[in-house]
Image 1 (cartoon, helix red, strand yellow):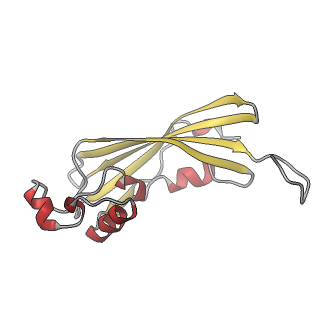
Image 2 (cartoon, one colour):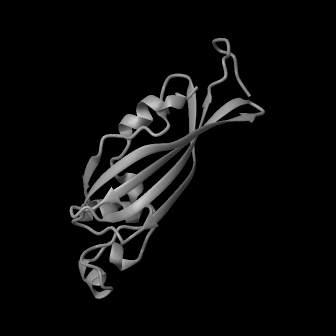
Amino acid sequence: MVDRNAAGREAKPAVNEVERGAIRRFAEAIGETNPIYFEEAAARAAGYRSVVAPPTFPTTLRAASDLREGLLLSQGKHLLQAEQSFEYARPIVAGDKLTVRSKVAGIESRPTPSGPTDVVIIEDEGRDEAGELVYRSRQLWVVRMAPKHAPGELHE
């Protein structure tokens, strides 16, 4: 199902400019109310240089599309993101210019009642313009082949 040779493959780096409006829209979408996510003055009063991005904001950053499209997204595959974790060296703030590098950290097959399932681990790393680490994330994707059915037949 998933190309085992993809383990260790790295995506092209993706440069992301973190905009204040993007932080605000993301914070609104997840129901945040803390003013450090919306107001420059509140963020500065809390010791930040600008509006702060919520902890899960890296999910909006451009990264690994060339890895995911060929490896995970293709005809006949079902895809589920099962886990995601983040580690921060510092908060992401408006004005940051982050270069995100992604790699396939591992691939394994697991038997399941519905057939073989592949588990793919993708790790992202975001660095600022000085090359300093800002965050790391790890995503666990579950990939399985869609069941084959006759046209019009319902499946379980």
